[in-house]
Length: 357
Image (cartoon, rainbow, N blue to C red):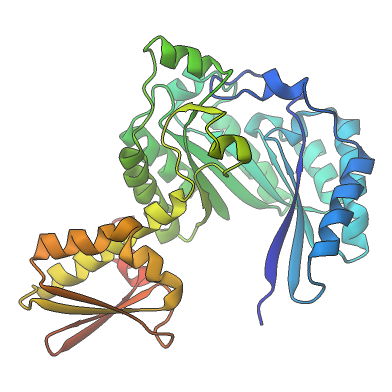
């Protein structure tokens, strides 16, 4: 039986972040958030451990906030030491942190390694120089390359986070960013469609008509392209879209932009739609009755949001009867198409293999 993955999240305010990115409001709210202490870290870990099964559990402590290694070095050590106790005692398997590409060097990396950090995620956002400057990121594409190189030397698993729809960004630039990141061979990636958040400079620009966010449809389509690019090159995408929170779900924080509480589902559904189209076009559909078998795990993505995939395929290919069957014997991420007397099987990896890299 495979281990179930659990994350113990610890939010560290952006007190160390050296720049005011136009899309971020963390500096404005940092003063309203009490500083996290080593005691807080221990209490949070203890609270979570009580709720997590002891057997078949892979547990990680994750320091979120975007700029962990930008906070004072001594403060980093205090928080890491508190979490590392649970790694040493075998309760926690690993520690992960998120940070900026220009806040990584050999000294910082050595310290992270000393205290049990195994995964470092870099908030890259874009590899386009103009987009980075317009967003006041304060780092360059070269900083990303250098940071990845240092982290690889110390043996960390590396994550990259990119945003789409930022000021000055385009579909072409986003695809180019993904391809540049793929060349660096990270282990994991996250894709975040940019949202206009209250109390940010981007909100002011949006109100003045100087910034226009992506539509939801455009964000889903572009995220799909990027997901396929990363995954077809062996890089696992662990999140698409901002994590829903109480304020986000209630509409308190978001002014505008392509937020959806199930963004990943929308994107994956488009991948399955493309796979169905590929199969039907490949076989030159001549029947009006089509049957698709899929593992129950993938049924939701196959059908699509509000049956969007079913309706689209029936209309595009003039299908009278489109039968969807759940079959546990079908491997996950695989489609079995029956059309007439013919049966064709294609996995997501098979589909990715025929696409340009």
